[in-house]
Amino acid sequence: MKKHGYFQLAREDVLQLTEEYGTPLLVLSTQQVESNYKRLRRYLPRVRVHYAIKANPHPEILRTMIKLGSSFDVASDGEIRLLNGMGVKGEKMIYANPMKTQGGLRACKDCHVCKMTFDSKSELDKIAKILPNATVLLRLRIDNSGAHVDLNKKFGAGREMALELMQYAKSLGLDMAGIAFHVGSQTVMADPYLRAMDVAREIFEEAEAAGLHLRILDIGGGFPIPETHGTFNLSEMLKQINARLDEDFPETDIWCEPGRYICGTAVNLITSVIGVTERGGQPWYFLDEGLYGTFSGIIFDQWDFRLIAMKDSDAEEVQATFAGPSCDSLDIMFRGCMTVPLEVGDLLLVPACGAYTSASATNFNGFSTAKYVVWEQIKD
Ligand SMILES: Cc1ncc(COP(=O)(O)O)c(C=O)c1O
Image 1: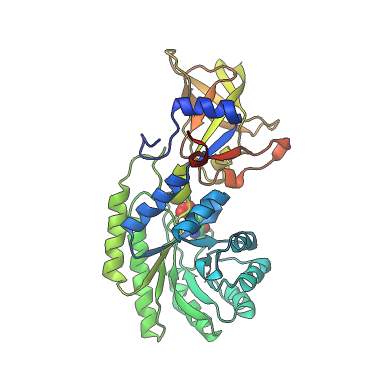
Image 2: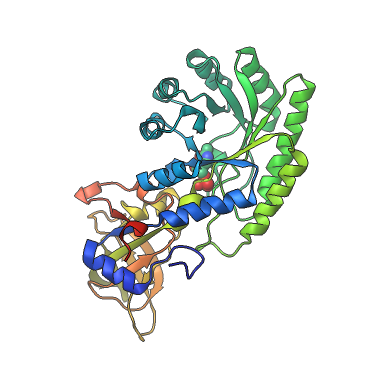
């Protein structure tokens, strides 16, 4: 099912699945998850992958990643305990939320998670109180306004604070082990990673001169998926990152925290048109999935989804508005979207919608979240 270089259902499969399971339906390919993981490992062979489960914590994705030997990036007590319940050892997790809750720190203690990031002295005080032997990485702020989602508006210590914070960590008796950064989600070129590595290299040297030996560099997530955001050359990008790691960090343990890259291309949504109307001379199509469901990524991830009508039509495409099923007027996903004219019952396929979609879906207004099926378990 990989005509497009990643998982995309054929029309006949969409029709058959709809008949069997109804819509809205999310179809997950664990094989795609596996090939995404293996591709990253192939291009970045020294890098230990920590899947950022916030992107999509579906149990079959987690099971696939566990089977592949991945480590995990967790951000809350819930994520730590979820993985612990699936048999993942604490040593395979990094608590990569620079702002930790007491519940999160207690979960670390209970589940033996001892690696974490920080970006302030007050966070170090909290960590040292509950986990005095923790291994800590300084989360560095990286300026990358070009990222699709710039996480550095919220997290990361400025470069000028690095040495002072690291020395403070050491003075508390913590294992001050390295530097972490996140260049921003869906970063489509190597430059921001390379610039961040330049700064990290400087800090490694500054730390060494001050008697602090750093041994871990965590290059975060941000690796892009091919979909609606223009073209880019992923293999070239990863080759450049890998070459720089070998050049500047030959002896360092390298970690990464991909979320979107692992799961984004592994899920397709099938949704139906449940209502049609016309406003201001434009058709409006109401779908059985909306902003409070899988399309929550439009709000929380600023993502632009691609809709493919599963209909043979010679009619000319028109500009239309697509809205969700809830009674809320905010629940409008796309305006001025080109489509062939649609009718109630027509089906739309949304490929590459595995990251930051079902993870943030709600039951608002009493609507169930979209059902998941695993493609490899049901095909044939
Ligand atoms: C600390 C951290 N690591 C990793 C990720 C995953 O990022 P991405 O999905 O862009 O790979 C995030 C995303 O929010 C994050 O906050």
